[in-house]
Image (tube, rainbow, N blue to C red):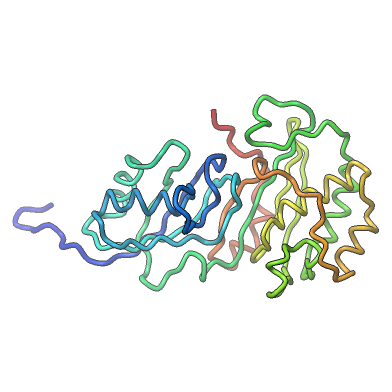
Length: 277
């Protein structure tokens, strides 16, 4: 502060937050009305109240994540009355947050910015451990079966584009559109892991986990490609039982620029998620 200057007066500001969290002890992102349910949004609101006083803070995320799903770079926004700068908010909140939730970066944004409404697309990463791995119980789905990668890639190509995923939807979602535009389903074997990236504008509840479970069922010979084609064209609400467990899934990132969204899959390598100790 320069000589003679006065401290900034508190005023309403909006900030974008880049978060990472380990999902094991969270019941997903969204705050629940029922007491005692631990969610990422709920913890952020509680700790924001400790930092900013008992005022009403707005914390909105770019979308829901399932219980047990992790996040590498999850975008949210915070609106609050404060005189603190973005770096000061980042430091203050991180001092209050539990070990399984951290803020990687905070920056000021326009008051009209909305983390969910302005999000153009989202990317998820799924990890399958082919065999027993030390970290698989927490961060990857361990499968002892031999998986046919070529069959899985052929099946993955079926999911790309605009499709009616009614056969993969939960019953409560049938009142709304089950059309989803999927931009990318990419697979890569690396260091004993089978990595699967799914990029789309939005997702149905459990859709990524059902797509991964279906791919694994095809790769292990329990499901045929023709059966998957029928699921995509039959228009029947089946909610297929092949759903991969939540602990292998990572929210990878959200997109707010069209060029960045379109070029992501082609330019960013598919690598394993960090293995926290």
